Image: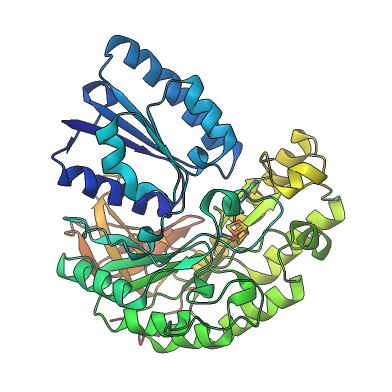
Amino acid sequence: MRAHIVTFGCQMNEYDTHAIQSELAGIGYSFVESYRQADLVLVNTCAVRGKPVEKVQTLLGELRKEKYRRRHLTIGLMGCLAQLPEGQRMGRRFGVDIMLGPGAITQIVPAIESGKFQSFEFKRELQFYSPPPPTGELSAHLTIMRGCNHRCTYCIVPATRGPEVSRPAEDIINEARALKEAGVVEVSLLGQNVNSYGMVAGTGLRRALIPGYPSFAELLRMVGRVGIPRVRFITSHPINFDDEIIEAIARTPAVCRFIHLPVQSGSNRALKRMAREYTREFYLDRVHKVRELLPDATISTDFIVGFPGETEEDFDETLSLYRQVRYDMAYMFIYSEREGTPAALHFDDMERSVKVERLSRLIELSKDISLEQNHNWVGREVEVLVKSSAAEEGFVQGHTRGNHVALVKADLSPGIHRVYVAQATPNRLYCTTEPTGLNSELIQGPVIPGTYDLSFAV
Ligand code: SAM
Ligand code: SF4
C-alpha cells in the first residue's frame, strides 16, 4: 500500500504529518512522491489565510479527477481547514473519504480501516502521544502544547485547534532524548504560544502553573540539559514572554538566541482592535529586556498589514516600530478575512490595493534594515548547521544559531560547522571556512573582528 501526504502551513502541521506517517508506516504503508502512484492521499491543511485554502481547493479538484480514473483511491482531508465548516463543505463537494480535524489525528488508522470516516474531536490521547523520531534528520520539531487560549480577532486558530493543552514535561524530555539518540542536532519546541506552557486555563500575565508542570523557562532549561546542541522554540506571545524566560535563554547554552516575537502592528489602536492584549510600549519593553540580556540575539516578528480600520497613521506607527526594534527578519502578511473570526463579523475589509501598497513599503523597509543588521555579522565567526548543497555552485547551505540563511563556500558535510561571515545580503550570510573572507573586495559594511561572544556555543 502506497501513501502520499501533502502538507500545507506551519511547523505544527509538519510535526503532525510526521506523526501520521509513523502511524501509516506501522500498518505497512510506504510513501511515494506523486499522488498518481498512491492508494491513499492525505492533505494536511492550513486555514490561517485565504491563499493556502485556495491551494487546497485546487489540489482537491485534481484529486477528484484522479479518483474518477482510479475508483479505489482514498482521499483524506486533515488539519485546520478540515475542522471548519468551510473545509467540511469543500470535503463533501470534492468527494473526500476521510476528514480529521487537528485534534483527531490519532484516529488515522481506524479512519483508513473504515474507508469513510470523520472526526472533529479534540482527543485527550493526543496530549500523551509521542511519535518516534524521524530517521536521518539533523533538525526535528517537538510539539510541547496544542491549541490557543487567545482570541486575536483576525485569527482562526482558536477555532481550528481548540484551547491550550500542554504535554507532560516527562514525555517531552523522553521525546527529546529519543531525537538526540537518532542523531538530531537541532530541536524546535512548538506551540501557538509556547510561553504559556504548563499554565492553567485563561490568558494574560498572572496565570498560575498547573500543579506538577514546570514553567516554560524551566522546560527550556530541562530540554537544554538533554544534550542536543541547538534548542529553538516557536512561537512566543509578548504578553507571556517574561523575564524568567529571557534569563533561561541567556543561561542555557544550548538554547539558540533567536527570538520570534510576533507584534502584528505598531499602533496601539490597531493592537486593541486585534485584541492582542499588549501595547506598543509593553512590547518595546520586552525587546529592551532581550537586548539587555541577549545583546547578540536575532529578533524576528510577524506583521499583519491592512487590518480593518488601519489608517495611514496606524501604518506609520508600524514602520516606526520596525525602525525602533531593527528586526533581523520578519514575516509580513496582508490581512486575510477568515469566515467566523470576530474581525470578519464586526469589521469591514479594506481595499486590496491599499493593503498591497502598504505591504510593499514595509517589505522595502525590512530589506534595508535586514541588510544593515546582517552587515553587523561580517567578519564574525558563526556556527552553521549545514543541510545540503546550495543552488549556487560551490556553496553548501544551512542556517546559523540566529536563524540566518548561511551559504558557505566549501564542500562541507551535513552537520554543525564553525565558519566566518564574509558578505551579507538582506536575506543571506555568505561565509568561508577561513577568516580571510570569500572575496575581500566584496565585503561591505562594518567588520567587527573578535567581538563576537562565542560563550553560548556548545
Ligand atoms: N500563535 C502565533 C502568534 O500568535 O504569533 C502564530 C499564529 S499564526 C498561525 C501565524 C501568523 O499568521 C500570525 O502571527 C499572524 O501574523 C498571521 N495571521 C493570522 N491570521 C491572519 C489573518 N487572518 N490574515 C493575515 N495574517 C494572519
Ligand atoms: Fe492566533 Fe492570536 Fe492564538 Fe496566535 S495568539 S494562534 S495569532 S489567536
